[in-house]
Image 1 (cartoon, rainbow, N blue to C red):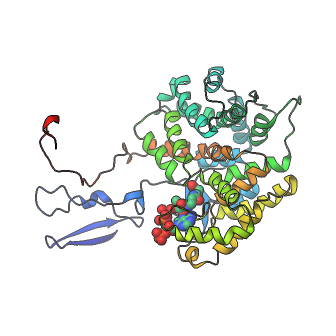
Image 2: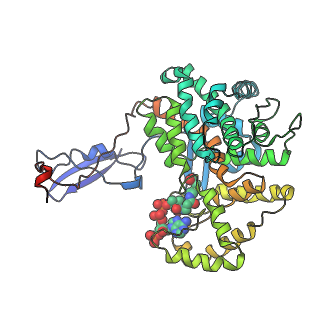
Image 3: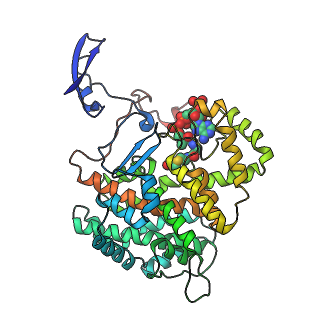
Length: 430
Ligand code: CMC
């Protein structure tokens, strides 16, 4: 086994710690003490910049080479040949389904798309202009009250039931949240349609007897769902694992994961990109905006949809999305904001500020343009991210639960506050 030798210059003592999979175990440092009563050495890693939190067999990313794989299958191949439900199966169960497994899985999902009528009533209570992502994450959390059997997290069958319910019902919740926010009646699922086709039905059906989704848009949405299904230890997945490590039910944990996704630096970025493009307003104003981004070193103005903690080259998902954009725009007409986005990308990819920091378009840079062209309002964009990511969250949650090395997530801190002092009565305070 490879090892690392550490010399503690405070004491002159030498330690040898094992190196496995390119990591040392933080707990192996605890033996390194400056004096006998010492707690032992810790690592300090705000924002987990260089800390592996788990061993995972689900998603592989090579950020320098721009590689993304689910269970070993390249994202480009899945985007080309798979569909969302098959990819979700792969992510959850580790292998592509056989024909019989795919059939049974699709049947299970379509049998669970209906929402309990109480959930509908609950959703009716939100303000008329409530953000659909706020409705989405609260409703997912509230589902734990409808399915108390979800508390049996160590029962495999219970976990499977919740998995079916969650994957099947998140599109229904998302669609109801949307219909609520625009004051239209909820549309019940149509189980004759595909996963993505039915979602479009629940969103956009009006008075027609049967909603006929456009097959190009159904396929585009399905591919976007494939691209967003998992992304290893990102902010929301870390939330899912962290909350789940307290052994709470998966609905409560997933509500927390969705809350993490809502933020503009994570799944809210696609909405932020569109707001940014609207604010820029014209191709002529792109250089001025880039100047503002470069001047705002404090992060106050960022080029949204650019940069990534892991990818230091072109995000492979963004490449696939750019191709789908052409197919969608051929049906819907070009999104007028596309020209601004292309100009931003062109300038940024040759500007030293972005090149030297390895800032490239990420998954969110073009996805919002497609969603908007398909008729989704901006506030729905993070919800469109949450639907497929539910598969990844559940797979990561289950992997965490079954990993004998995992315990309740509980980091350490470096205390920098006041030293012990005596309480001062109010009348004696200066
Ligand atoms: N525009 C301008 N400057 C940027 C940007 C950006 N989008 N992203 C990073 N930088 C700069 C940052 O100011 C810093 O510069 P300096 O070294 O001079 O201080 C440097 O690049 C490194 O940035 P960082 O903030 O330390 O990087 P991070 O790994 O903490 O942040 C990120 C990653 C995605 C939060 C960040 O790149 C960002 O805010 N991007 C815009 C939001 C966005 O598009 N988010 C979606 C991410 S992809 C979807 C998902 O999986 O969530």
